[in-house]
Image 1: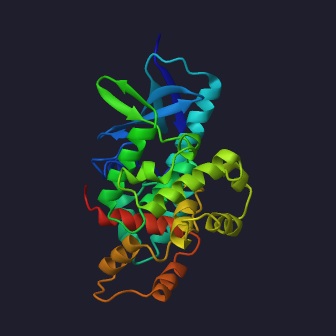
Image 2: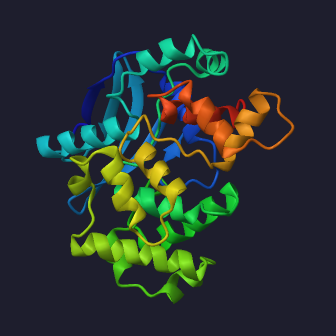
Image 3: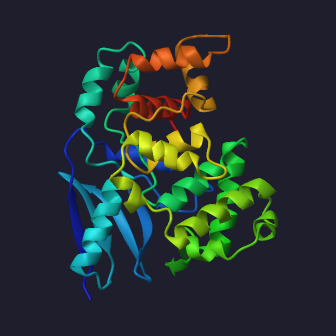
Length: 299
């Protein structure tokens, strides 16, 4: 059987190398395998696990499935996922035009131009990752995620490499907090993640339900969830709903990047961060993401 290829056109500006650099920021990442020129992602196609290789191919991306039976419906689902993952439908040219008029953002878009806001198309993954990362170091958060995925996710081994899908809500909904405590989750985080899994399994929470809502309505619904505060709700709107106006004003990484670029030695207040955000209103999420990216340097 010949490889199946899916071409995904992308409007400029788009730099896949910049996206890959971001995707390689952690050696303990478990949800994809990224190299200098490609990223491998395991897709769950209604219970069939298919490994796709994603590479740059003018004028966009090409996804290759080696010797796999991929239906037209599968192709549509994969393209939808990839477009959301790399935020390919966003008018990033408008952001770059704004950034060129902004002293803080101008050097960032000149260094990282074409980087898209890489997110989490799956709502459960976005919420779980947001909760996992609360009040711990990023490196430990990646460790917890790897433990969680490798215990409850699905996997497929190809050429000696194991690839994983994120655990399904229905697999997590049946757990008790003690199951996650064994992996060094706090009791509250375990309760929060299992509670969200149960809501999603029961059908009272879904991305499809929220798609038609306004940003304010999405924010309110997310805040109703145990374990989801303002930061997590803003983060999920950024990374799962492609809301370019989401702005996690209390984010530690955002404050760290602002202090560095503004050459500040003192702590910024939330009021100051909000005021800075007003200068790039409409593109708060992209400004935040580029500031986060600047923390990693040339990784």
